[in-house]
Every structure is written in C-alpha cells, then in structure tokens.
Amino acid sequence: MDVKQLKQYLENLTQSLKSKNHQLLKARLGSLISVFPFNEYEYILMFLLDREIITFQEYEKLREKYVASNPYLELYGIATGLVIMVLAFGPGIFFLFRERFEKMKPRTKRNNYQSINT
Image (cartoon, rainbow, N blue to C red):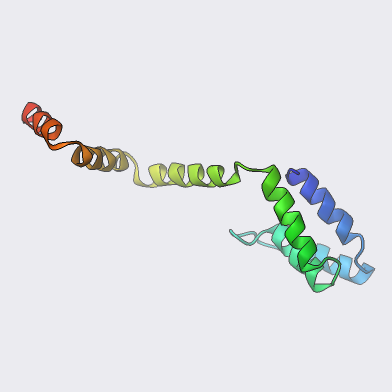
C-alpha cells in the first residue's frame, strides 16, 4: 500500500460519513495546517474513529498493512535527519566526526598520525 492507495482508502471511508459530517471534514481539512507528526491522514483517521466509521482495531490493521508494505520508511527518516543535520551545521560536523574517529583509533596509529601532522 502506497500513499495514493492509502488516500483512496480513506476517501472511500469518508463516503460512509453522513453528509453533514462529510462537509465538516472537508471544511476542516481545507484549513488544516500539517505539522509533524500531525497531518491530513492522521486527522482523517481520528475523525473517522470519532464518528465510529472505523474501529481502533481497523486502524491498527491499516497501520500494520501500510508499515509492512513500506519497510524503508524508517531508513528514509534517519537519512532525512542526517541531511538536515549536515545542512544545519555545515562542515563543522565533518571535522567533529573526523576528530572522534581519530580518538577511536588504536593508540599506536593515533601517535603516528599526530607525529606526522605536527
């Protein structure tokens, strides 16, 4: 299940809402500001749970299905975090990591490196 399929599934579920609730959901989504971890999909799911269109067990099954079909989402999140860190702190991160790796080397190699560079 990808994001398009998830969106289609949620749209199909929203069709089960009463007309008044469906209009209310559309109006709220129109003015919704998505801020991690709160987004449009989370809002729709909570709305559907509140209106008893889905149960918590159905939500869990949907979540498990989505996570199982997207096994690299966690890796994507980690990579995104690293990119943001590098952009935010610039080349200073490189020098900090290099210094840390030098400290992790065995003492003989570290001494040789220091004597060459001094």
